[in-house]
Picture (spheres, rainbow, N blue to C red):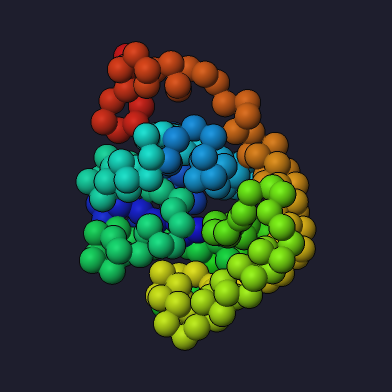
Length: 219
């Protein structure tokens, strides 16, 4: 995930953002795909660990949330690289930090969160291929072999890398173990972020139309 800022946001770096959020609590908003999304978990975790106040502005999906940032209706967004890179390349938004162990090869100037003072903040969005439960082992093995060949091909690896990702190929057994570990990890992150305790007032405000363009409740 990348933390990006609207081109009009009054910050040029993650350190400036943190300093501004501490000096003026609640004045900056971050857009997300919606309440309970991984993007909200990322935002609330960021707030919780740094003890800062950012306003959460949930939208109905990634598209509307990204448009809100590009239009300056929300200052920030925690967005997977694939979704964030087009706006960055066109100069429509600013990358502030990446939630990975190392800097991205295609954004070498963007620091990791660890570099700006937030350690153990590595958030990856992954994609996998699954078959229905009960699929014969022989078919699963054949599919795995074919898919590994595709993922390891130069063209696919290059395309994934250009989107800020990493191509990975594994066995069905290892992938099953990975899914279980990710469920445990994200469950712990949700608890730490406090997302499950967020008041229903936000959702009610959106359903009743009592929600302004800045992502805040109207008086």
